[in-house]
Length: 165
Image 1 (cartoon, rainbow, N blue to C red):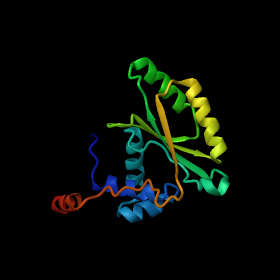
Image 2 (cartoon, rainbow, N blue to C red; image 1 turned 30 degrees about the vertical axis):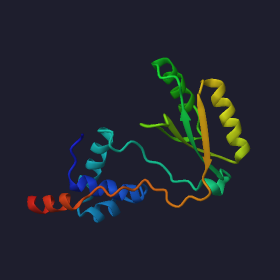
Image 3 (tube, helix red, strand yellow; image 1 turned 180 degrees about the vertical axis):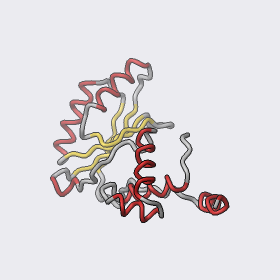
Image 4 (cartoon, helix red, strand yellow; image 1 turned 30 degrees about the horizontal axis):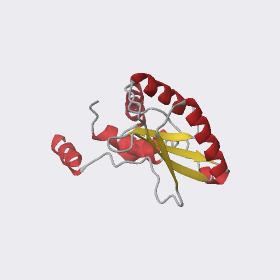
């Protein structure tokens, strides 16, 4: 794990809120001047902790109204199958997230498409590309919470930073 201090964590929390906010605003929020904050942001990016800056799009407002959670079971567990499967899902822009799981389900995908017909097209193309034992898809009726913001500071971090001062 890359070691980062409380100031790095505070910078990351500010960037999670809005990565497009001015550097002055981030520096003020973390109680540092612009240059040290910019250098820290650069270091965090070089370490791969900051992977990229993106825009949070409201997909429903631009016509991608259906969000499916796709549960995949496979009877294939060899490296060749997995490589083919990963290639298939990584090449699909409608797959927003993909996770390999422990338990009864092997993979879960979060798929965003225009409607059920578009999901069916996605499904048909996926099973043409790779052999899958069982697929179960559930449509989200309502998104209740979606965030990329994680509280990166804890009471222990705050207490330690106060001890260090």
